[in-house]
Length: 117
Picture 1 (cartoon, helix red, strand yellow):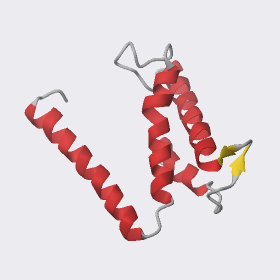
Picture 2 (cartoon, rainbow, N blue to C red):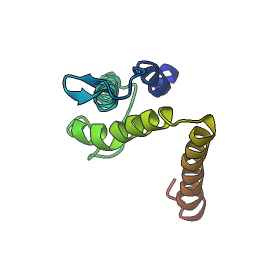
Picture 3 (cartoon, rainbow, N blue to C red):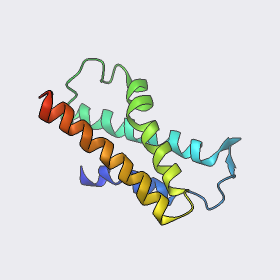
């Protein structure tokens, strides 16, 4: 499972240096985000099939892989590739820190205050 957690880094390493390069007529960042998302959905479906991963919601399941693709992975890959392409380490750290701050606020609100987590 830990290897799956570094998929974003692994796919980030596959990004071509030329940001404007197209693959099959599609910008490479978008193409690789779609490929990475599809790969991750297939891994989740496979893990679920052997009971190594469970889904707790009926709407997040093998019956709706498009939802896992669109909501679960595609935004992740698009944002991670966008951060990868930022000009300076300072900007990358600022954006990553903003995402971390948002996550911590969500944990505080939904876990600490509302007790949903």
